Length: 483
Image (cartoon, rainbow, N blue to C red; front, side):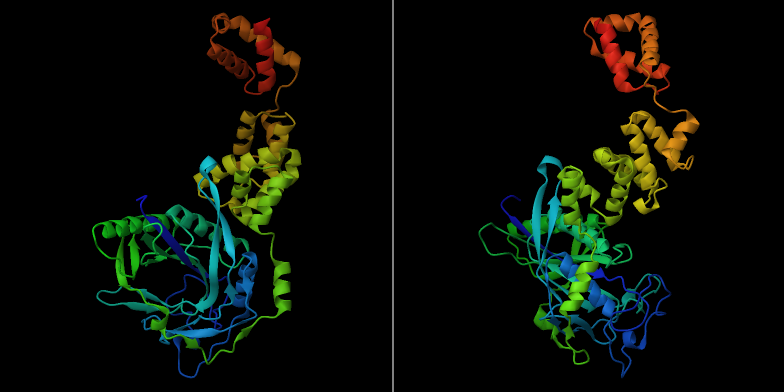
């Protein structure tokens, strides 16, 4: 496979977080009974006219500004003509030659650890369009049902340049884009409900030769499926070419059950859709004032926040990237540091990324649903920092807070008598008792067996019920054993 170069471009359909559709006042709420949210405009009844949703345009502007793209001061809606039973008009209102967002890019981190690298994925465009309805097959024997609730739902279709060279790069891009559209509040990102759907254009060619013929994998609604589909398609194309076959341009579907792609139809080109400006919609004109107001309303963006975390909290690039993977995570972390103190920024990062993340994952919760608030976690980290409790005791306090057994770390520590023993006299008494009772371990340590020292530390901590300061125990034990 090293003889082949892979070329991947991604088209993403982002469902915009508006309460009504892009050209009608019908609701966009998910889960309603079929055809209960389809207005005369969505049904394409005679004489109805589309009216553009200002909120959808606002979402497009927010996205364009967040990726350093050019927000077109004038863009045009076009009719994309094709027949589908879930598209009553016989055409989709989209944008073609003059999209609302042009250019821009997203920087992603691919891989982890020492092998991680940064890559800039350039965007071609992002354009506004309406979604089609949905064909239902499961409940109809030999028939197809049509649900037009989704028809007219506002979409922002975001198209990349063919900049990705592996499935891992494609997934890194998709995850970064998913995080960004949620961060700036234009999409809920719910992939199970179809709010964020990716199409992957995949081709292979020998280095130094023109790009190969691409095949488009449609409607991938999970990052795992995106990776599996691309990897299968790459293998299939290479094997086909090496066996002397040719790749035909096509639209394919991925079957998660088999892990394979299968052709759905020959791929259409732009001329097949007979695009022309929609005569029912005036050109979209966006003023400088509107762009300025939208820019001011944007939150601090992930890349800027990542750099600030590295500067203000001296975090590594990996830690800062992880903590800015979602706005909710970044906000929780900063609120934790605000309570624990800036000197505890790194321990706070560890608790959020490791202990808290593991507990949330175990219980299937989002960070916004955490039973332990940022203020509570910050208070816990502060007590580790001032040696009130050890890390081991802190884990017990955390579990108690998770179970709702106290309003704060201080309350749990007080109630359960978990305050760390730091009095040197009290620790020395415990050490002397353990040394006297464990002559065999003492002899083994003096014979050069380091494991014997760990056993002695364990005995002291057991005698102290885990509350002795571990560092003081270690230092005092070594002092007495060397003496």
